[in-house]
Image 1 (cartoon, one colour):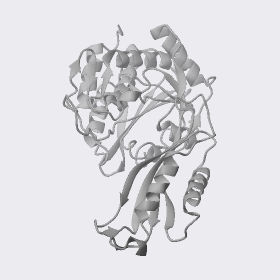
Image 2 (image 1 turned 180 degrees about the horizontal axis):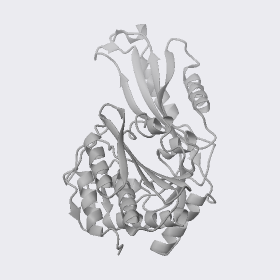
Image 3 (image 1 turned 60 degrees about the vertical axis):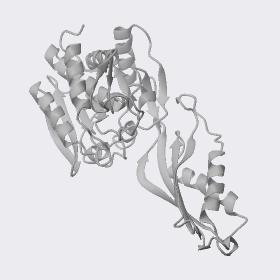
Image 4 (image 1 turned 30 degrees about the vertical axis):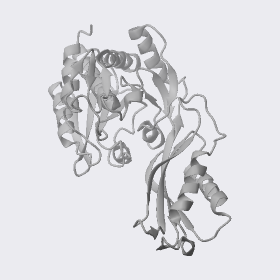
Length: 388
């Protein structure tokens, strides 16, 4: 039992945060950000709001030690995806049942936010002397690209003085050394419309799109890195839009592609690969025109070494709290660790209490014991890195 912050206090904090809807889009995180700010200020931790865009509020907090020293950055997002249909509980009810807290964002990743807040509050209450500082970012724009969240803060030099970072995305208490990257692409196919009774007079854009979908889904990648949870890149067609009327041969169709990357891949290599697939399908005809557009939202892949001080400190803490070595890998999805590593030049480890497989699913939940243990592990990590 932690003498500085109780399980009941952690559960209450978790429920209050889950009950505040922060669906992105539109990412109206102001109410939740103000709640976090007030709780931190009430506990003697200096915090302020930083708005990257109207309605998108981020919290920037700081806990300073007795003198200058190393700087640890904590990062997590408070925005969540839409609940969707099919829930058997209220997605914003934060119901406690059988040792679990249910709700949208429970695992991804308000439990991570709560564990970081609780760890800072508990560490301050402990009165243990330390040097340097702990910076906490609770950001409001991760699910749609981080442009007004982590990227905004880093690009305005907030937190860039950190020596190391922890991202509390869901890992089920595993230690993750990086994440795959992501590019979203739109493939726009232009054909020629005509009356559907005379299809030979037109160029069916959907027909060519179908051929591209098959080629994309059957594409196999040679690059591989077994340190990642999913060791290869992936490419999925996630949206399709085409046609104007049932009796008109469609002259337009758009495919949207989700392309996951591992280190060594870049925007240029991804575009070249997609273009090669397009050329292989359309080389025998010149009637359809295909244009590839890269969306501005991005995450670059990254991977840090097991020998980084932040990795060693958190592994040592897990051993002390749980009594065994953690699972160690790199994440299949994307996190703001990408931006912290590439923009901030800060080694970032991913560690959190949430269950990765529950992210974006109905009836999302998090085990209470995970949030309590993550809080204890983070407090121990603070001591390992910063204590005098």
